[in-house]
View (tube, rainbow, N blue to C red):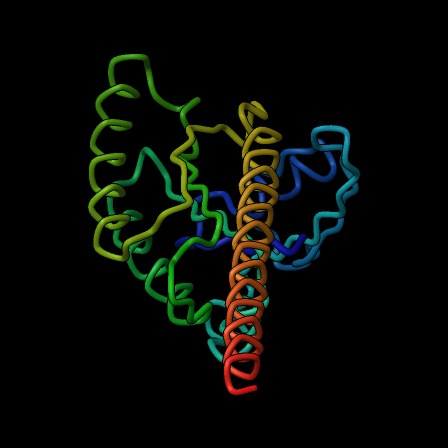
Amino acid sequence: MRIVLLGRGGVGKSAITIQFCQHIFYPEYDPSIEDSYRKTAIVDNTQLIFDILDTAYLEYYSPMKEQYMHYAHAFIVVCDLTDRPTLVEVNSAVNDLVLAQDREVNDMPIVFALNKIDLLNDSDKKLATEEFSSEIRKIVNEFSLTNWKIMECSAKQRQNIDEIFMDLARRRQYYDIVDDFTLLQNITLENSQKKSISEHSRHKKCSLM
């Protein structure tokens, strides 16, 4: 399962990725750290391989970034709860991934990760979460997204890190099931129509005789 992380520099994309894969917290982005990771995990009794791309080093290489987004199965759009301007990048990130995916229906799995909740007290966290969530819902409506979730997290304290990736996996699995069911319905309908046409043609031949 290919996952791409998007968001402004400094919001914690690398920290979230490394916490999920290695259970280590890096307080600052280090360009020498790997930009892609692989982890095997069990989700609902199914073994999945997560291929995760941190786009931090791709911020100035848009053609390559667009290619990664096109072939991604799911996305994590990260913003910093302590830094409201990072919301601006959320709109830009969603616009980029929607264009790259180029789907008739924008049903790609997306988690909007509100990072750094450990830096806020309960009162400020509640206000910030409500404000960020309200703005994100406007973006969701603007781009007609159908398969998304907003989750608070802390890369530093490893809060909700695993849950973000597990949620994405379940969302992808669910939509794969829906797509398979829709395909089965279409095949059944097509076969039914062919059978109806065949019977109609046979009836006409019998009438002519």
